[in-house]
Length: 167
Image (cartoon, rainbow, N blue to C red; front, top):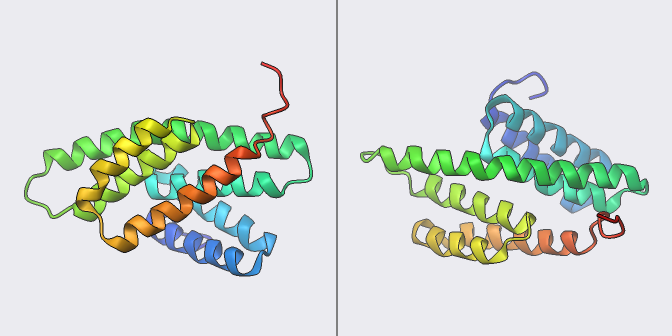
């Protein structure tokens, strides 16, 4: 995976290390997941890799003992989410233009990505609207996965290293 240029392979690699970090708390696993998701996102502007990269940047920021590093990760996560809103809208429009493909899963994940990006940018109301729309395409496990990450993200955002900065 370290030499792969396939966004799906990189997403799977990132997911493995994300889970390993969740289990172990080992910072090396977090850094490996971040590297995988970042590469997958930057290669193809892949929304799955991008939203997970942004989330894990917030996780790493919460663990950082160096304020400048925490701020950098938080700002990079914010900028990534801003880009992901555009990517998600374009992907959803693309899905709308293809009528003969069963794309329920894709539609759900694009909308869930958009919702998570909106939460990360402080727009909970619009995020809830996206999630309502996404529910038409979701299985229970999909909703559960999304809600878990959104709950964790909201907790991370409450402890933003940007709170103490003056405008």
